[in-house]
Amino acid sequence: IAFACGFSSQSHLTRAFKAATGVTPGAYRGLL
Image (cartoon, rainbow, N blue to C red; front, side, top):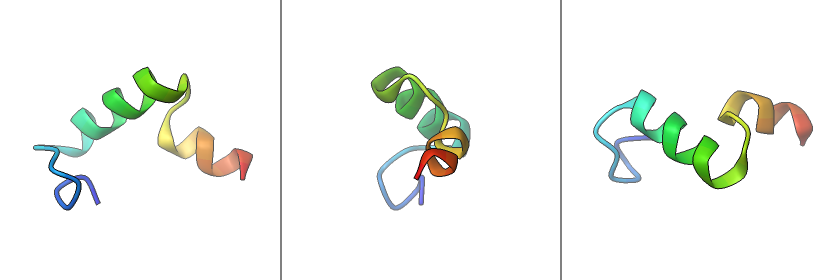
């Protein structure tokens, strides 16, 4: 998913996601 969205790595996606939402992708998934 990270590469499909234009990120160079999974960790870069995780950092950007956390900066935008305040939680990691895994934590966000748990909230759904």
